[in-house]
Amino acid sequence: MKAIKTFENKKVLVLGLARSGEAAARLLTKLGAIVTVNDGKPFDENPSAQALLEEGIKVICGHHPLELLDENFELMVKNPGIRYDNPMVARALEKGIPVYTEVELAYLVSEAPIIGITGSNGKTTTTTMIADVLNAGGQSSLLSGNIGFPASEVVQEAKATDTLVMELSSFQLMGVDAFHPHIAVITNLMPTHIDYHGSFEDYVAAKWNIQNRMTATDFMVLNFNQELAKDLATKTQATVVPFSTTEVVDGAYAQDGVLYFKGEAIMAADEIGVPGSHNVENALATIAVAKLSGIDNQAIKETLAHFGGVKHRLQSLGDIKGVKFYNDSKSTNILATQKALSGFDNSKVILIAGGLDRGNEFDELVPDITGLKHMVILGESAPRVKRAADKAGVVYSDATDVKDAAVKAFDLAEAGDVVLLSPANASWDMYKSFEVRGDEFIAIFEALKGE
Image 1 (cartoon, rainbow, N blue to C red):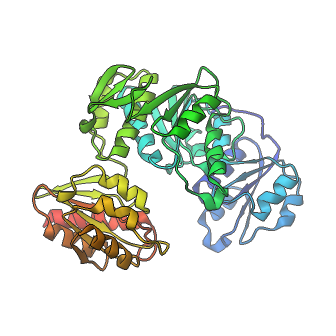
Image 2 (cartoon, rainbow, N blue to C red):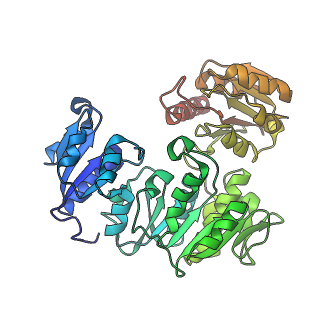
């Protein structure tokens, strides 16, 4: 970590805790800043605030007093989830106080080069694939960012010989200035988080911040399956390296079932360890980064072939008596489930779906579920999911929860079939999070396996 003097004796307000805020507060303190932390959760329910106070950092909890901003702060570092129309953030901007997210801090002190990955879908899988391939190829890569490892925490241990492989959300990228990755990836861009950004155009602009400081010696890896990406490619100083499953490009591409990089065959598409057309795109982005980083083809091929997915994201759990189980609890919307189903033969799939939706119908899912062997349906959205199943001509069963659904699905399955949890719905009607929902599925898989 660089011992920079930028924040020495400067008053900095860290707004919002969680892991990233806690890490930012500690890093700033280490850099000599005079740190105040402000978090909405009451102090007696806030172990992060309690720990920081014990370390001598000033904490104000339970409310967000606007008058706090009269204390001559020179910088605000905000939690990415806090919107810019939040009164505290708005007041800071009115006062001309710079507002960063903690990935900016991480960049400023990083000795290690950064590979930044963003996009609407596939960020976590692609980030993990890239880190795995780099490590298999003999380079030391460290996962960081929106993937659950705060960048400002990881960077404190990273050396110049490491590479930070950093997942970045649009929220994080709105709070950067000097941030400059050597390689950046945008997996795809779909309308999402519009409630935060206000419009798709503003969402894309936030994502595009990833390349603001890049130059011709840096590489911008873009998904040329999208016309939007082709347009963006004309608007960066970075060297664009495209990937595509639909055409031959001057980068990574799929042709006749084989994945190539600039004319060089790397591996067969069906050798990738996780199914789905979206994972072919993720693998192509990974191949592009790996080749730009000097990784040999064998390391790329072996790593991608053995890649088992990310937990709760089309995660392969294994098989029981020839029945394969996949945990895709992260599929909280129709698009994600469509992507998951694209990798399977529907006639062999028993799909577990349903949960909490926004009152929408599931007509968009009908073409994708047509031909399924069976569906097991649960949750508040069950009546609407059943209507889609009826339209698709799919037989279904009811379940009370994920455990019940998994048992029923396994009872219906034969050797060669797939039991797929891909709900197309949020979890909050029955579970605290999609992670809890997925963990229940994993637990019942292990229990069934042990019988």
